[in-house]
Length: 253
Image (cartoon, rainbow, N blue to C red; front, side):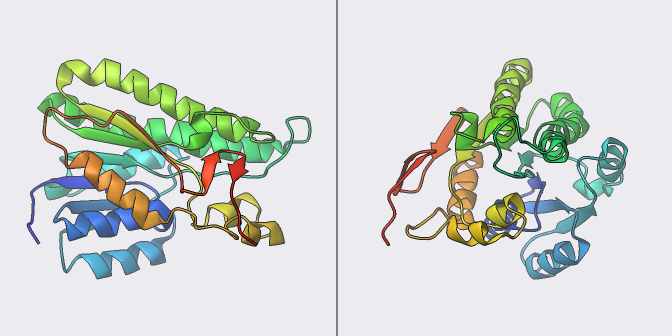
């Protein structure tokens, strides 16, 4: 393994794509700042990966603006210069028509998927502009490309991620900072358990076909950040082979 001096900060690093990205980056010699709400999981991942690279953990909720800025400000000197920011933390709650939607679910999705992404970015970007270098990858979704029935607010939050990504890329272009989005569709993670609050329907989401795995997306993220300096993967949409769009999935029962 070739070690680098680069440091990547990953939000939502305690499970799914974020955790897989942490393992992939460590394998590639990239030092890590791992952020998440579940301290026990952060400790477990840190213990596993610090044999390969330097790892620092930050235990906070990106919905909390004050704690987000405090956590990132608290980084030790050797972790302060973030070269790569992976805005991965996100969630989905419920699958309801707009007239029956739960306002608490709406708040949770907008607070994490949109506002939390902005808080973390605001805390990190000034150092990137100062050094005139850096790479930001926002993890969006195929739901940011098309709206599906009962997806209303979740789809809106992921459309916002794409708009923010495009705005970032324009505004940070003078500083030589790369900005891109990676937009997966059905990835077999805790996503459905969170969305459906553990109901039986959660177990059926990924049955009958081979869904994307978190490691698939982690490899794609690393591919994006490892391109030569003149190459930026601006926008990438990823489906499992069985899926054609948000509502068309070939299942074998």
